[in-house]
Image (cartoon, rainbow, N blue to C red; front, side):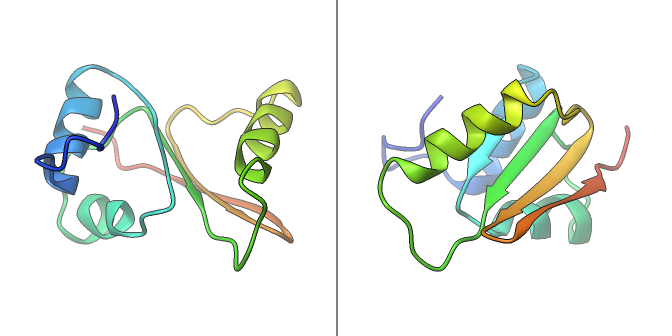
Length: 93
C-alpha cells in the first residue's frame, strides 16, 4: 500500500495497515504520535527511518540488511538512524 494517491491521510494509512496486518515503513514521524499519543490502533510493526541525508538506495539496503540479520520487528516501533536502531514495543489492543 502506498500513500502516493494523494488522498490517503496518515490516519487512513495507519488504520488500513492495522486492519490488514501490514507493516509501515516510513520517513514520517507522525505515525509515532498517532499510535503513542493519540492511541490509534497500531499495525504489526512500524519502521521509521530518521536520517539527515542519504543516497536514494540507502534506506532499501538498510532495511534489507536489518531483515536479513533476523531482528524481530513484530510488535515494535523501530527507529532507524545512521548510528543504529532503537525499538519500542507497540501498544497491544
